[in-house]
Length: 456
Image 1 (cartoon, one colour):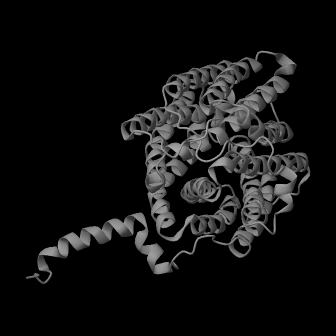
Image 2 (tube, one colour):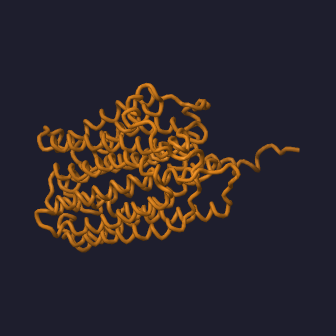
Image 3 (cartoon, rainbow, N blue to C red):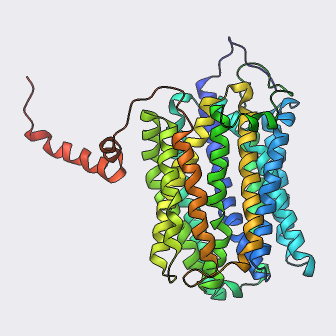
């Protein structure tokens, strides 16, 4: 890839146009995710899959996704354009969605085909992520980075939620309970996802790619094993390992929660989709709050607060299967995940030098994928043999998830240090920044303005 010349400046109009194209690409990507991620496990259940098959689907996709991240630095070093590589990966994802749509028509080979297609979808997305993140890191001005990504989340969230809710209502009107939907319905969904992914290519091709800042990305730098050996010594390596363990405990509940709600509690698809709607709404409300906190007190504070809150969410999934505590859990989860995703992305962008940004993103995401896959395979094999907790077997997995989240959350507090000194934040300061509190305070100040003592 090209290196940037100190005398070279990108015109502001060109940057703004590129950000608009990026915004549209992100919108279509969000709609694709709204189709594939919520529907892939239910599609497997429609084929008659059990706990182990669901875990293998998720685990294989995440494992190959993590391994694909390890290839990204070498691929990026020999590439002339990050945009060209991202385009290829997006096209592969579009084709993988078509393969996934056809998996259910292959009889007994359907499981294998679905796992393979989903693994291709995930791994090609992984290769493109670090390249895209490096691309955006050079394109988006640092001063407005938190606000830009917060704005994207605020727009994408509601649209993705409406999209999922509309499909859920369609499923319920046509087939009633979701388990009665034929594979043809899921095939149509995955075909639509493929079309949306091809649509992303239209905007990516027209998006400006600035030259890489700094020196050319090296093909040979520090290896993945050298990176892991620095955990406990190097600040970023320690953060990456703890962040991966946190994700492992958190992602563990994902596919099992879908199985629990749809199979064990026998809920319809609208009920299931409403969990995602609650998470999206909470994310939309809180993402600007986390952006303000990150700007004032740093990305690491946001990650620490969210990690601790995230650890206790599965406790709300225990009990007799009442829905309202689970909805509360997803509301809190949407709020904290918006902070984790925003702050972790920007933390790597701020910490890594431009020439090493691709490698740092890749190694961190590879560690996340490998850890989550190990958790999935292990707990997938154990899920059918665990004792019942309260009323359902999968609630035992949810309880263990609390401890698997809490330990790395404590590590993020005590083992990871803030590189740049930040002002201390009190509970009162954070409370004043909360969405409702901040809005109420601004309204009260406006109401009291006529009664304030006049100046001059």
